[in-house]
Image: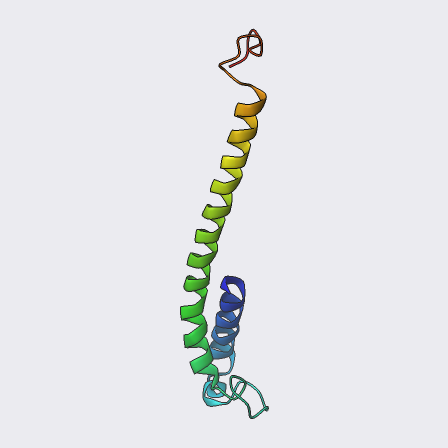
Length: 93
């Protein structure tokens, strides 16, 4: 959502800079929503969708990194148990 929202928003900005009169035209010739929305309305929607997509992406990324950290921590604690003195190697933490 984040990347596509940014791409649509940049597309609308490019149209606004180059062809200002196209903003009131529909996005496509297809007469079916969302393709028949005006270009400026599509830009406003993309402007809202991009930060929301970024926020959702960051939340999912944090959750995935916490799960990976937990799995890695369990693997390290099972592999190098500090309660077993025979498993501790000199010079290692």
